[in-house]
Every structure is written in C-alpha cells, then in structure tokens.
Image (cartoon, rainbow, N blue to C red; front, top):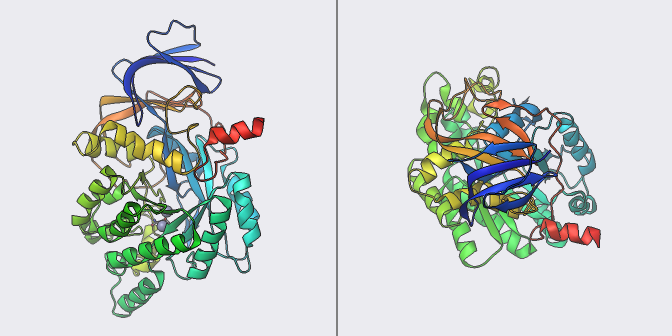
Length: 471
Ligand code: URP
Ligand code: ZN
Ligand code: ZN
C-alpha cells in the first residue's frame, strides 16, 4: 500500500515547510515539492499540519494497581491514543514480588497480543531484587529491547523499593546502557503522614495531596539525582509536578549531569482545588504526585519551554469513578491513584501551549514526539518525519474545533480530566507505519496491527543498531 500525502505543512522539531510525502513499505520514502507519483491512495493535506506520530513514554494499560485493574486494556487505551495522534507508547511492565523479569515481561506481552492498535515498547518496573529477578536477569533485558528500568520511591507496601534496590539497579544500568526512571517521592515520610491523617479522621480526597507535600517530591528527586551520579547511570524523573522537583533537575542539567525530567499534561491544568470538589468528585483527580497549588503551573510551563523538563507524557492510568474511585469513599488512601489522558495530550498542549503563545509548534513536537523517541531509543524510526522513518503521521487540522468530553473519548474511563474544554486544532487522519489508523473520526484499522518495538539502548540510535545487525 502506497500513500501520497499532498501539500501538507510538515512540522518537525526542526523544520516547517509545505511538501508532499510519499509513503511506501511502511516508511516515508520521499519528501518533495509537487511529487508526480502513482499511489494507491492520495490524501489532500492542504491547510493541515503533518506531524510525526506522537510518542507517549508513560502509560499504564491493563495494570493491576490499588486493589483493582486500570480501566483501559491495550485495545481501548491504544485506540484512545490513536485518536489523540499518539502512534507509539512505552508502557510499564510491573514485576510482581517474587516474580522473575521474564515472567513479568511474558505477562505484559500477553496483554497486548491481538489487541494492539498502535506500536509500543516496554519499560521494566523493578520491585524485587532479592527473591524475584536477579541482577544478571535485569542486565539481560536491554538485549530484548527493554532498555529502561523504572523504580518507585513511593507506594510503600506495594511498588516502593528501598535505596539499595534503587542504587543496585542504577549500577546495572550504568553497565547495560539502560535508562533509569524514577517515581520520585519520599514514600516513608508519606506513609507516616497518611497514617496520621487517617488516625485524625481526615478521609476526604484532598488529604491525598496534603499527605504528599511538594517537599517529599523535591527530596526524592534530589536523592535519585545524587545516587545516579554515584552509580554513573543516566536518570529520567517521571511526572514532575512542582517547583520543588524542577529545581534539583535544573541544577543537575546546568551542571551537565545525565538527568532528564518529564511532566504530564494534567499538571498544567488541574490544581489542588479540584480535589476539594464536593460529592466525592475530587476523587477523579487523585493521582500521584497530586495536583499542586496553581503557582506551580507557570514553573512547569517555563521548565518545558527551557528544556529543564524535556518531555510531556500522560501517565495515563485510567480508573472509572463509579466502582473504582469510589472504593475510597471513606478513606482517601484506598482511592486507586491515576487518571485518564492518553487521548488529549496533543489537543491540550496545542491549545494552551502553542495557541496561547507559550510554546512554538517545533517545541510542541519535540516535547510530545522527538525527545521521548530519542530518550527511549526509538529515534529516528519514531519521533520525526524523514526519509526512512516509520510513516507514523498525524494530519492535524489547526482549525477544527472540538470539545473534550467523556461522552466522546475512547477511553473506558467514565470521566475526562478536561471535561468541557473547547480546543481549536485536532488530529483528523492518523497513519501507523503507512496504514491509515484513524480517518476523519473513524477507527479504520483492526486490533493486532500494532507491534512491539524493541528499543535501542540509551544514547544509541536505532539506525546504528540496525546497521550493526546487518554488518
Ligand atoms: O497516580 C498515578 N500516577 N498512577 C500511576 C502510577 C504512577 O505512579 O505512575
Ligand atoms: Zn508514578
Ligand atoms: Zn505512571
């Protein structure tokens, strides 16, 4: 199947020009002016942006968590992603205590089998190095294309690891070329605060935020940065929510240490006051780190503008309000932590980042596609539009008006974090490796089309890996 995309405004992290794009054998094979070529399908892209498919490096599909399982499996979650212009994501395999990494990885491969609508890779969330996976097994994961290790410094009694596990994993990463990712919060201090709040009868959703103050995020971020320096591993701090965590990342980056940070769409828009909404509606905004005071939002915009933070992900971890969030009606610590968002990242960042003048179109593409692809070993196959890259393309209509709502989103979540928000600009046609996935508001591809992507090691480019394999 060949496709000729005519006259779109091609926008990458570096370029902005009007051109035709010829797609063949899953890849972009030619870019030029007025291409006169026969194709199975011609798409008129006049007046539209042609963007690289967005890459979401932080999602949780079909994940057991907080006494339940996330509402979106690979089919509904990836369908939702596709409608939002995301064609590749990296999801977290969670090693259960006592489980080997191979068993955990097999389980997650099984979850996507026959359901995948877009491409995805996996990170390995390390929870147990004493009785579960060994250091040797951890070291072998990059050979299987799993080139990032994730550690939770919070969620005591569940996913949290101690500093020894964190540090040993960092040492393995420094040898294997994997990227270490941390959920940076001081889980011990938070556990004490939660216990004390509950003992005082403070059970409502907003105590989720009051028991996880910004200082606990700042402390853990700094600790992870310093430990990564000692171990000699690169570090990526996920879902940065506040100035207290931005500051140590800024210092580290100024000093030239191998530190990167990510924030998520919701932290720009949802603040602490949402947790105080009556009738338990606040539970919709119980995710971790929690929504912060409004004053943190300008710090986040500034950080993504200046590359103190290099990626905007979604941390899509959807639960239904009815039946899942309500498990914590009488105890905020029992509300499953997480929110939906995989479908609306591009809508929201285009509207409030680009259209409101905070970010250039190039920077938006960099934050949503190019940087995550580079950091997570997917570039230049993913994350840009270039001859030889996967033809993961988003035709984006900058004039299309949409109202974001749970009534129309494809996630199984029964609420939308941005309910009722009107945006101008939306993806209209989305291609995955040259196959049309979404066409004028309809899903046209069948589940099963998405592939597992083996990722290159940190700092190694995928085409170098390919070249080595051929030599
Ligand atoms: O609340 C959140 N973020 N849930 C997903 C797990 C995590 O911490 O990323
Ligand atoms: Zn987290
Ligand atoms: Zn997460």
